[in-house]
Amino acid sequence: MFEGNLVLGVSLTQSVVRSEMTGEKRGVPPEILQQIRDRIDIIDLISTYVSLSKAGQNFKGLCPFHSEKTPSFSVNPVRQMFYCFGCSVGGDAFTFLMKQEGMDFMEALRELSQRTGVALPEGRESAGKTASGLSRERYFHLYQLAASWYHRNLQDNPEGQIARDYLDQRGITRESWNAFKLGFVPEGWNGLSKWLEQQSVKPEELIQAGLVVRKESEDGTRISTYDRFRDRVMFPITDPRGQVVGFGGRILKDGASPKYLNSPETDLFFKGRSLYGMDKARQSATASGRFYLVEGYFDVIALHQNGIENAVAPLGTALTSDHVQILRRLAPSVMLVFDGDAAGIGAALRTLDLFMNSGIEVRVLLLPSGEDPDTFIRKNGVAGFRELERKAATLLDFAIMSVLSKAKKDSIQDRVKRADEILAILHKTKNPIEKEEYLKVVSERLGIRQDLLNKRLPTLPRQVNADPSAKGKEQPGPNLSIPQGKPEERDLIVLLLQGRLEPDQIRQLDEGAFTVPLYRHILGKAFQHADEEGHLNLNALHAEFSEDPAYEPVISRLSVGEYNCDEVSIHVAGCLRVLKEKQIQRLMDEVISQLKVAQREGRQDLVDALVAESNVLRQKKAFLTAST
Ligand SMILES: [Zn+2]
Image (cartoon, rainbow, N blue to C red; front, side, top):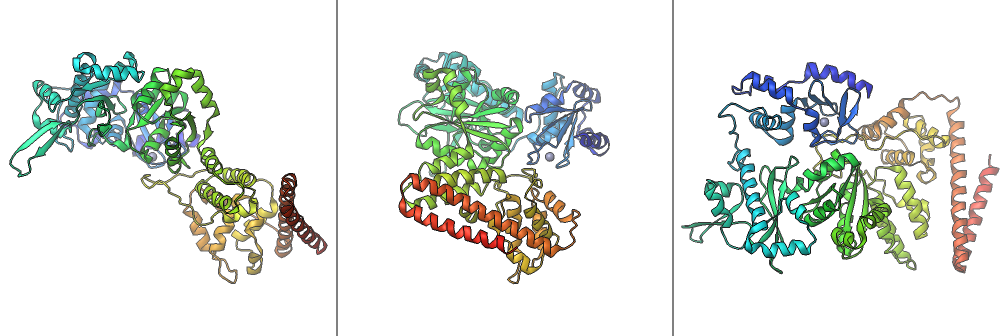
């Protein structure tokens, strides 16, 4: 992106407002600010959130501030600034932290002073309250304290034997205890609060932090408090920088509930955006280009202690589009690792909508039913795991095959139903080639002709934004280009888009005769903007395409491009005839291949029907040839 670099030079010096100009310095000595600026490595800072790769003088990556599939987010290590050509957000390290983490200037300053080791003057170390009323620093401090108390309990509290036994039985090593700072909280209502109060933590701070639950008596006269977590193995949850922001706790008593309990959400802890293990997985994921998305805490740890460090898990909640965006910014591919039982298969399938068109290459690694990564690797070693990984199907493949596997071969209704299920899945993909390939497979497997499947494939406007929480404008998906070959299809579409077809010519266009998905899509849309006489409302058609970034460029090219032919009507008639001939030939080929299958399977009634069909087609073809 040579152009991008040129523009970046201008933008960074001229149009980006440095945060030092925003007047939020609040009396921080300029030399301190300068020292911090001199020592910041903005590449290092931003790499915590975005996978950056070198591109000329800059580094590029997917913008964390808007949704995109091709990188337009640039970071310049010399100027220590970033700029996004997609959403025009830019600035320095301070701006980045303020935008990314929702910090104010002083909070960003304190964060950067910690990162760079430049001490701030007295009295600048605290300020800025979060919504809970605690400052970010205080919040982090309390969670850090709690984590260390839980961790010590796991190591040497006599009551912790049950937790130690449990972790041993789950195959968690002592190294992992330490790496993940695992903990234990004994039974009792106020173990943590008592201990924290000895560390000069005020009771109201414990409530603000969500570590303690406040309860009013029924008549409202007395207020009592108790520790949120009791008798559990504790998993500290960190932000991408490794600071503890919440906990997950697994109950130790059999049958007690809830089995897993999370800290309440705060303005520093959102379940829908947190992925367990991210702070440890990030580096290895950006280096390898892949995340392993597993089901829970233990799976992350099991893979980690087997040397697979790029594993993360949602926090016992469903995967969200925020999760998908976070993963995508750091790595281009994701391996879903699920138990192969019905629940695991269902869980894998539920991610389809989120991952479809996300730009992430997703594969599904199904463990044998009833296994988790730990039990599987213990039996089969990492090599066995890698073997499954090599065989992992793409998510789309997986989804389609799981529908196909349910199809009852001898029931036409069932096959049609399955076909519709698959078409509903395929309808979501924006990739016309992928769609075409799968239709072929489905047609063969279900014995339903491909042109019939094509006809059933809805031509209704696709949900362009399947991801409701995606912010900002969606960038173009697959880069559509004008396909080579099929000149008769191309010419008809060009003439259609340029308004050079007569209504009766438009009426002769048959969507089923076109084979190029792009052209068929254009035609489908055009018919929606045609009246009964066949008059096409070109303006409405163009307006609709101009809203779809995937189609806009190629439609513009087809509509505006120079196109000369002397006798439009003769040329159109020729194109229509070639189109028809090819369509008949395709139908004949299909009928013949089905005929072979029917003969092999000895289904005489089907054979007879197909022979009759092929005779009709042969006559039609002969008629077409004779009429020219
Ligand atoms: Zn952007």
